[in-house]
Image 1 (tube, rainbow, N blue to C red):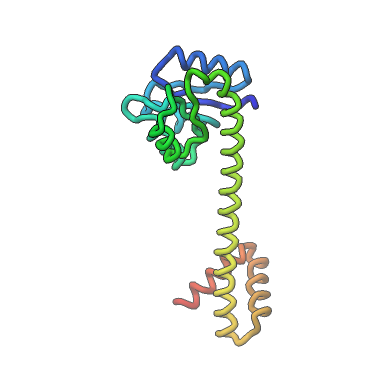
Image 2: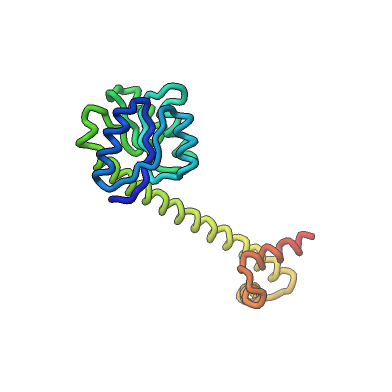
Length: 191
């Protein structure tokens, strides 16, 4: 908790002031406010907050569309705020991939727990996406190295172990990754 940067997007200035006071009291920094979705999106892109709190029913670009864009662009977790929990609002919130949907009258009691959970869950998501990307890169590297080993084994009539050692040695001698050496072998073979 604390020192997390938040952007508030709501057409009601009094509501924004109230939420800002609650967040500030708990150590959060409100680094920007907007009245409409388009201005809010520009603000989020410019300020890169840790969390965005958005009114669900904004004029122009509504909060659901804004939340979907913020989610797809991996900008920050979003908490949607609505006047009621109509079923279609909840369905729209699910599709927009928001981290929480709060009702304004009960906001004071639920805001900080929702903020904490949204921030924690978003950080976990970012960590997992990083791990997935790393695993994909490792797998792709392994495929490229295997292909290059196959080429060396075939063209030089050497064992798989010897082919691997040659790729590894070139990698160390040239101070480049094994993947780069393997890609060079594949490229040279295809020419």
